[in-house]
Image (cartoon, rainbow, N blue to C red; front, side, top):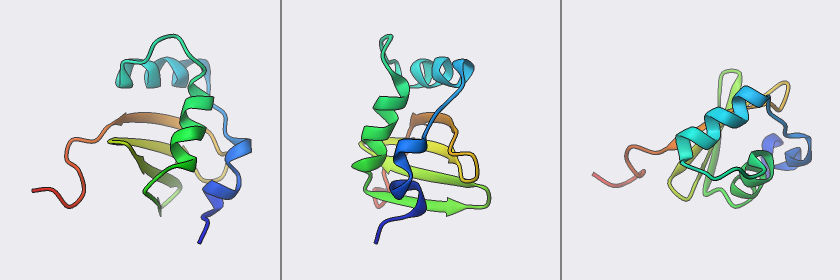
Length: 85
């Protein structure tokens, strides 16, 4: 079943500060961070909603998206993989 986030992936956007934060947190070169996050969300292994945010888990990273505005807030590397002790 597709989540609201996955169905509205074309509406995703971020701010300049958000893009800089994502690039810093994930050690990314100067790339289109929105396109990068869209790809990761489309291939996410899990997408969950907690409160006002969506959390997409993909390739060892977590992307946080505001559920109402579809703004990508941040992304960071997972500290622990789910299911791994």
